[in-house]
Image 1 (cartoon, rainbow over the protein chains, first blue to last red):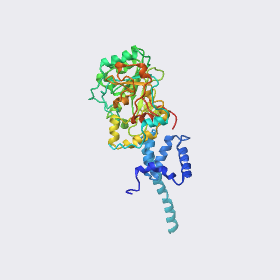
Image 2: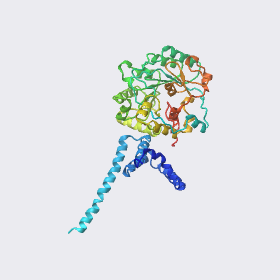
Image 3: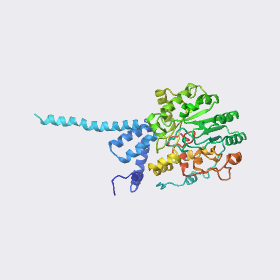
Image 4: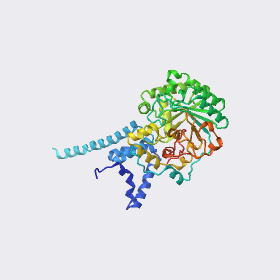
Length: 110
Length: 328
């Protein structure tokens, strides 16, 4: 194995059904239903997925949902803004935990 | 270049969906490609059209097209290129088809309307009640110019304003302006209706431009786009995407089943894509306009190849846009 991540592995995702076919079936059905047009459009869901893909830093998901977003009609500007939203939440999540730091400082300081 | 296939032959896909052999169901569109000469050289062009191409339909071949059409009641003529307007006999051909009471569509790149040598084209279209089908692959300048060349977007806007000013694309007018989207890269087009809504909103908000319909068309792995796929090493993944999203509902409605395509030299094809691959009409049907035989061509067997996956992927694709509107 040369690298932990290989692009061709994305197409092997369904091998996760081997050994646990019922679980894979349930996951696939649920996954399909999640991304179907609903109260949110398929395009909106793909943009959320793209943002989350960056937040969890999954290269498979970034590859897949970049293409999905384009195929659902989003453009690069909109996709870049979605990534900024994910980054802002990640950054903000770190920063807001600074309040805990300040609480501890306050507790242990004279 | 590295074209290793991981998908079944197209005819096998047809066989599994009970469409093999694929046959024509008649001819309702007579498509005439009047030449490969164009004032642009777009990166996605399957024709590889450009300013240096010299394949241009002669008047004699046009006359053969008119003779052929007279023997039929084919209602729609679809004139394409290159930039069809650059053929020296373009206006004559359009008027001759109109004199024979046929509905005429012209596939325009828009920028030709802004060239000094082609003045009053918009007025000519209007006088002859031509349906204009115009390439506008995106509503953002940067994306469009990357695909079609620097400055093309601004000229396209200027041309659409000209067309709008004489009634094209306006509500209540019978002058039809349809736009064509195609992806700026190796991915499938979005759903036609939501994208049409985006175009309508953005084109009006940004430029005050109106149009009738938007057609989404898949890029075909032919010509200049094929070269791009190979150079960018996207060929295999793109073909796998096209094949894995094969849609039998779209396959049953592909345009070759109701279209006949005539090349600049008079040879006959099932579609403009087969034309660029040199795959003439076959299986016993005549392959030149001078031998036009409606009965033999109407139920001819279609010549297929791997590229046909381009018309059957996802929602399907044709010169009139998507074929299957259901969400997949």
